[in-house]
Length: 370
Image (tube, rainbow, N blue to C red; front, side):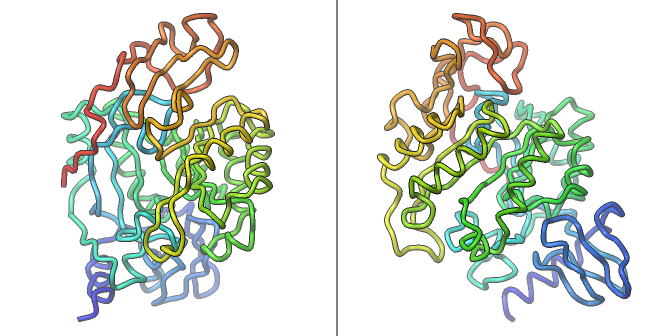
């Protein structure tokens, strides 16, 4: 049997109803507003994501399973200004509303589009997942790996349990959101990472998205007081020009100079293997562009130990290293008072613990718990 057809059958048997806030009756169909595509899903059909579908007039959405579940350093998400040195329980499902040719999580994200993407679900309950976070001492739970917006109802079920245990919740997303889904998430989600893939709408459309939707999402997230960090995977020949990087940096700085911008190195993957990995020099150039635009915190990524102290969090006032890190490992956290430089007392934006660990509590190596 065709792998995609078989997997589709399994997933359709493990669903939950869409939230009324995210599914509106419209004629014979249902308007889904879980992502920026705003699909009109007719009976017997699915949206662009392939996992939200109209079953006899009811929009059904994924639930009751994970396709990936592991304990990660929170720096891997990456969040550098939230719970540094801590672990996060990370979970993902299947499907995506984009089809990026260089996707590094394509086995899960493209599982219903590509027969080569084989990732079977593991069935579980929200309580089972949160019990793992508590036992592992992870103060943060993050929906990631595939696009979490299209499985927001399940994420909220998980996050509701997480909240009762005092855990903080986050999204790692492509940013193709709607105001409606962000309002739905806001009571449960505090941390939000957006993958801003460039500043060229033509390229965005090649990936399955619209640039304006993502830019609006970033603006709305800041207005709604999520803690936001932005990542740009710098791809040679795709989005690595001075002009494009400068446009991204200036856009972010105009919204909030405190918002961290991670510029990370591409490696050949999935259907984009026609070019080499991003040189370190390109990341350093992106770092300089970001700082020149006024961003206080720019972090080169995926070149661990090869970009000097640029992986470290520095005080924006006196330039002292406050959090020293190498890759996903925090070697030293010098904060004495949450969010304050220990040398000059200046404020550093982020989500900080009152008594943070002085260094990473884990090994810095992801640990699967499936």
